[in-house]
Length: 563
Image (cartoon, rainbow, N blue to C red):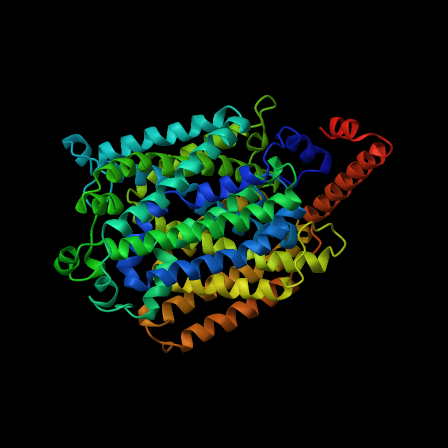
C-alpha cells in the first residue's frame, strides 16, 4: 500500500535538488515555456477561428491565465517543492481530488513535449527539398515526419539528463533568442506590409461572431501558450528564494508574452495578402504550413524566413526541453502523493535530476506522438486538459486558508477571496468554450486515469478511504456536470441547443461558483496536509536557527554560512 511520505523521507529526496534558480532563470523558464510553438502557429489558428477579433482572444487568455496564476503563486510559495502543481489538490482534499488534478495537469504538460517536436517538423516541411516536404501531408506528420520528431524528443531528453545547472544555462540563452526573434518578426512584417483592409473586410472584425473569440481562447493554442506559467512553480524545489522569485517569475512571464503575442497577431492580420484571403474565402480558409515564414517570403523578407526556419527548431526545442524538465518533477510529485512506484521519486544525487521520471515521460511522449501527429490536434487536447487542471488552484488556495491559517505564506494577497472564485469562473468558461464533443472526450481521458488511483487507494480500509471520497466528490461531480452542460449548451459552442444562447454562459458561471464553494467547504486536514505542515514547521525552525546563529557575525561570515 502506498501512502504519502513522512517528512524525513520526503525531505531526503528533495535534498538532492539544487537550489540554483533565481528570478531571472525562473522567468526565463516561464517565458520560454509560453513562447514555444504557440507563436509560430497561434496567430494563424486564432485568426482562422475569430478573424481580427483574435487580438481580444489573446487578451482574454492572458487575463484568465494571470488570475489563475495568482492563486498558484500563493500555493507555490507555501510549498516550494518539485512538481508543485500536482500537489496542491492533494494537500487540500486528499487522494481523489488530488489525483484527478494531478492527472489532468500531467496529461496537459507531457503532451506539450511531442507538440513542440511536431511544430518544428511541420515548419521544416516548408523547406524547398523533396524529403522535407514529405514530412507533413497538410494535416499531420507522415512516417518520416514522426521519425524526425522522435529524434527531437530524444534531444530534449538528453539536455535534461545531466544537470539542472546545464538546463538553466541552456534555457536562459535559448529564451533570449526566443524573445528577440518574435519581436523582430512582428516588427519586420508590419513594416514590410500592413493592409488595414484585412481588419475591416472579409467579414469584418468578428466575422464568426463573438462566440468564436471565446472558442479561440480555448482551442487556438492560446491556453496552450499561457499554460507555461506553471513551469516556474514545478521547478520550485530548485528556486533560491521561492517566496519572492516565484510570483515575480509567473507574472512577468505572462505579461511579457502577452505583449509579444499581440504584436505577432497584429502583424499576421495585416500581413496576409488580400489575394490569399479572397482565394481562401476568408480567414478560416487559410492553410499555411509555416504561417509566419510563408508571409515573410510573400513580402520578400527571405532573411526573415530563413531566421524563422531556424527558430522553428530553437523555440519549440527550448519549450520541449523545459517541459521535459518540469514534467519529470511532476512525476516525482505524483509518486510522493502515493500514486506511482517508488523508483519515480528517485533524484540523482550527483546531478540533481529525477532520471527515472525523465525516462517515463519520454515513453509517454512517444505514445502521444504516435497517436496525435498534428500540432492542432495536440493543442486542443492540451488546452482542455489544462483548464481542467486549473480548477483545483482557486479551490485549494482558499481551502488551505481555512484549514491552515497559520501556515507561512510568503505570497499573501488580500484580494484572494475575490480572485479565487473569479479564477474558478474563468476556468469553467474556457472549459465550456472548448466546444462539445472535445470537452467530453478530454473528460473521458480524465476518467481513463482512475484505474491507477484505484490500484493504490481501493486497497485501503473503508474508514481510511471514505473521507478522501467524500472530499473529492465535488470534483467528480463538476466534471460530469460540465460535460452535460457542454452537451446541452448553445450550438455556437458545439452543443445541442437545449440551453439558449446567453443563458448557457450564466448557467456556467452559477455552476462554477456553486462548485467552488462546495469544494472549499469539503476540504479537510488529510494526512498529506499534516505531512506538509510538519515539513513547513521544520523548515521554519531551520531558518530560525540559521538566523540566530548569524547574529553577531559580520556580513561576510553570514554569506558564507548561508551559502
